[in-house]
Image 1: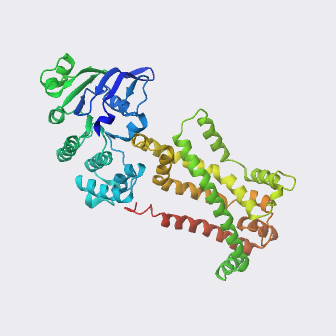
Image 2 (image 1 turned 30 degrees about the horizontal axis):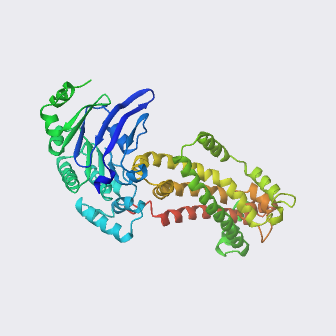
Amino acid sequence: MVTALLPVRVKQAVVRRRGKTLLGPVDLELGPRGFTIVLGPNGAGKTTLLKTIHGLSRLSSGHVKWSLPAAEARQRQGYVFQSPIMLRRSVRANLAYPLRLAGARQKDIAEAVEHWAGAIGLSGALDRPAPQLSGGEKQKLALARALIRSPDILFLDEPCANLDGRSMREIETLLQKAHDAGTRIVMSTHDLAQAQRLATDILFLFNGTVHESGPAEQCLRSPRTAELAAFLRGDILE
Amino acid sequence: MDDIWAGLAAAFRLIVTLDADLVEITLRSLQVSLSALAIACLIALPLGTWLAIRRFRYRRWAIAVLNALMGLPPVVVGLIVYLLLSRSGPFGVLGLLFTPTAMIIAQVIIITPLIASVTHQAMRDLWAEYHDLLISLNATPGQRILTLILDGRRALLTAALAGFGRAIGEVGAIMIVGGNIDHATRVLTTAIALETGRGDFALALGLGFVLILLALTVNLVTHALSRTEQEGRW
């Protein structure tokens, strides 16, 4: 299943807006397996990189090449935003939405909704308006909504920012399960402890370019670049 | 002052006794305005939503024109529809002049820009909120429009009510294209104008009260039916 969509190759990707280079040039390849954590200071281009690979940000030059045609590739990806976007509908309708878009059968939708509502602990809140949920509940719902179509690759943009420890643990558990089930995960975070817990490999971004990448253990224990070493020490990077 | 009180009393009596003329005119008003509203909504809701989500070269111009059309003078709309539907006009053969259909056409032209413009403004904000999610989920343009219309239903209800308010209270255009013919094209507003001119203030006031009552009732019923104002009912 996974091998059909991945690897994805990013070649000389550059994103410019209003004369300012936000990203690039970036060259990288994401293989079919792994839990990649994207690290970097504020403004390093983490969100832009994730959105560019996913197709939400327009490239100024370069390209992102999936192993499948773009339209089909998008169907098999998921994205979780830093600030969860809730449809102005019930929890049930939010969960069902991606499956409805894909034209799934009513029975399959109902089963999947029940399953994922249970997985995120919202079985008793299926008919509550999603915008009225707490921050942690919204983020779990956004994650379940992204996972409900069993994406081959899931992008997460700092999904645990501003969440309490319990919500963070629940989200990490869900992510680990998805990873174990074969979903390729690419996630940005500021939290080094979280990176140590989850990452199989690291992408370190600074000033819009990939300064260092490699297996998590190597990058986190013996960084090759001075910038990553400084970031890991907690220094302020400019 | 006595005339006004006498008029009010007579108007109240007409309403309570369900005067046949009053009922007939009221029902025709509703038929014309609700038909025009339904047709205008079918055009304006998708159009306003489409303008909010679609980027194209002359989009700003299109929005500016739409907003400008909101200020169309009804009398001029009536005149244009009259010319189009008159015997010598391009659609004269249809024989629609001085019929409720002609009145509906005029009202559709008047209220469609209003509903589309209010829809566009509301959908623009909702689209800004939903944009990344709907693109990420690979929603087709049709699915995006449908999602925005469903989730923005409160704002669209407001747009529709604004359209209904304008339609039911409109007099200039429908007077021209309808002709204010008794038992055929006479509606509340044209009847009020006629009865005021004839000095029959009782009927004019009665019709006026019904007009106000209708506008208030339709607003309240629509809100109740939509159930969107109730906490927790989604």
